[in-house]
Length: 259
Image (cartoon, rainbow, N blue to C red; front, side):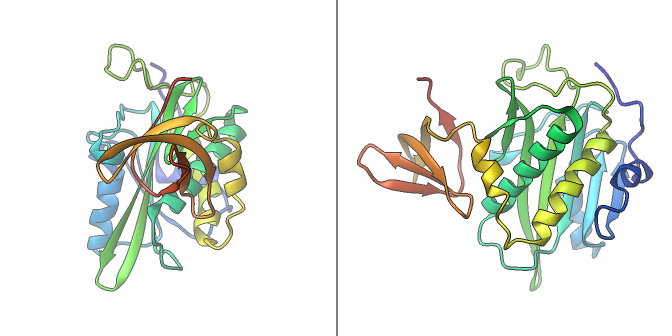
């Protein structure tokens, strides 16, 4: 298991960020339960916004649908960005899609490799999941905040774990968590700060690994199947079912059916 040689710290992240983003508070931890959970604690305590929280290791990393995210020490980039959106956000799906593109671009910049995006929040490389994203909203009085949590497997080994057949890592040496966190942040903040600009959707659609595939999903508790035809301007997945109806999915879990 390859570990980072450049310790994760506020200074190391700022070193790689340079002056590419507006002023941003940064907090780092050697070990934390979850960066998303810490972001919620911070906003409830009146902490600074926007805020980047990063950890070398998570003891209770969280994913979508109540799942855990395996976050062993110093082998991945685990971080959350807390911000106050400039416009009302009706669905987390748009933010999650934008974050997926930011991660894809950052990985491509640092490694030269291009991931596929499984709607709505996972990135895959060589058939294995290498990144998960969890977007959550929180309201304090009349103020609304959004937390974007990101976990990227840099050199994580899943040998002898229940994830061995599903998860993988980028497997590249010389890239530290601080470097990856900074690169994703530099890609993501402009997208979050300009919500009216959806030009990133072109990349989301281009690198989707579900468009044109037969998928299964649940709608109101009923299992259904259809063809994933398109991703609309809000990031919703549009699925053509057997009846001919086009269903827009804003949340939930999908499975790609083997052809």
